[in-house]
Amino acid sequence: MNSGNSGKPGENPGGTPRPAAAPAIELRGATKVFRTPSGADHTAVRDLDLTVAQGEFVAVVGPTGCGKSTTLTLVSGLEEPTEGEVLVGGEPVTGIRPEVGFVFQQDAVFPWRTVLANVMAGPRFRGVPKAEARERARDWLGRVGLAAFEDRYPHQLSGGQRKRVALAQTFVGDPAILLMDEPFSALDVQTRALMSDELLELWGGSRPDGRAAASVVFVTHDLEEAIALADRVVVMTAGPATVKEVFPIDLPRPRRVESVRLEPRFIEIYREIWSSLGEEVRITRERGAAHVA
Image (cartoon, rainbow, N blue to C red; front, side):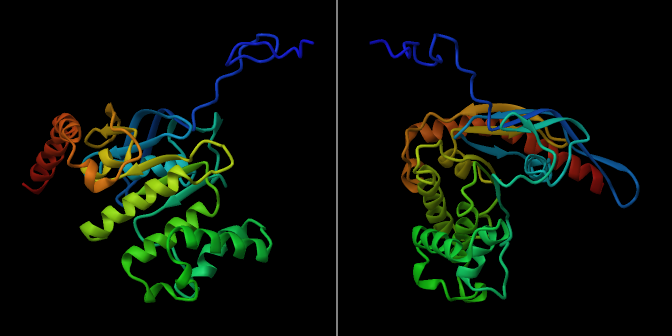
């Protein structure tokens, strides 16, 4: 007996094509203009086109002050574009969305709350019952290696431990999109490498119910970090930022940050991207020198 489900892969029953899943993130000609205290206009990003696929890890690099962080705030809904469009899951961004997690450079923790209470806070604000929120929080504290520290306060933790709290705070909300703004920049080299490895492990296994991993946009000044983590590296121009080039990273996964940096292919990719990024860094420095002069 024919069940009727005889379509080809990628088709609905009856042979009609299934609609392609919308990209996780799209920026279409996005421009953001800020008004400075002096009353002048400052264009942070201009005509920015960028697409991030479902489950993709994209790193964004560019000169200091070029508009990388502004790109994240547009995706998050914290800022609206002056021109152009920003879409998440195919829908225009009109405000802060619950499926978007944001890890900031500075720790976004409540200093008067314990580690457990900090991780519980997000689910509780979204209406999750207290017992369930506590269970979820403890699960994620275990995943980030802080189960024994749930009753500590942030000031009693090391920098790396506070970053683990930040990751737990974000992943406990089961984000479909994860925005990260230089989250490890304040850490020492060894802790930074360990946190990068932990991030890859959490990202790769964060959605065990079969859904795609979270889509990640990771802003960093560290080109080695970008290559070690990402599926693609986006190079931004000197401000106002737009996309200059996009480089696919063909290093196999799973990756360990310290070991992948020793691979000959890693070094080749680094040189290729730096030839593009270094030019934008030079332009930014020359502009700064001219301004001082």
